[in-house]
Amino acid sequence: MKAHSRPVATKAGGVYLRGMNPPAAPILIFDSGIGGLSVLAKIRDALPQSPIVYSADYAGLPYGEKSEIEVATRVCAFLGRLSERYRPRLVVIACNTASTIALAHARAVLGVPIVGTVPAIKPASEQTTSGVIGLLGTKATIRQAYVDRLEAAHAVGKTLLRHAAPALVAAAEAKLRGEDPNPDIFAEAINGLASQPDGERLDRIILGCTHFPLVEAELRVAAKAAGLSGRLGFVDGSDGIARRVANLTDGQLWPDAPSDGIFITTGPVEQIEPYRPALAGYNLTQIMSL
Ligand code: DGL
Image (tube, rainbow, N blue to C red; front, side, top):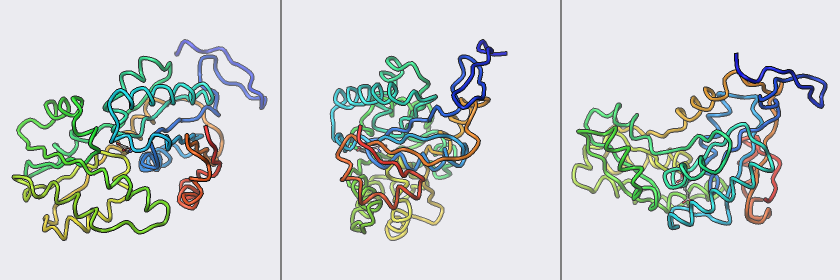
């Protein structure tokens, strides 16, 4: 039996247990832009009734080009303000750059459980048969010691090729605004891995930035054109994150029915206008500025 067992009346007349999150407490999902939607989709599949606040630090996008100190400061400040405002039951940092740099900092300053998103080196290592894995990420992510540690822990005896593909962030953003990104961007990203020594033996590519699963179909076409074999697979961490979120919130109270989510931006709200149709597809219909 958990410590919190005293019933508390809710405004709606129901009761929940003291110390437990009220049913309306949201899951707060955070990214620099729309990349975290690839994670949100899986969380919604696992927990359809969960209230969602999705926050995008558009005033700071792209994180991948920033220094470690800039990213850590922005993430902690932004999450602090959002947590105060929305009292989330749990925060998901749906950004590999922010997580590999600032997960420990954010956990140290926020009194709320935080699930991070880091490159899926472990599952890719378990799945590869050729022993050669590629990692596509932002410039900042692929240089992180966190990634070195994941490689040392989970990719022993495997070859991990890394390539920074910042143009894919802008391409995913453009796609969600309804634009057609230039196909050369996807070819460049794939060739950045395939042209490295052993690159022709790649059979798993880790999408180590949450923006990249949003352009997986385009990357698949580029991989085929680059002659990478039919056994190539793309791997990202979103399924594992959704399982972890479901696990950490197991037994908590939820609203009776799914509801539309809130989308918060640090930039001007007008900037989000072209994204509205795509966001509606993720049930994010209330758009506001922080
Ligand atoms: N979506 C972010 C990630 O997973 C990166 C985008 C950016 O550069 O801001 O790394």
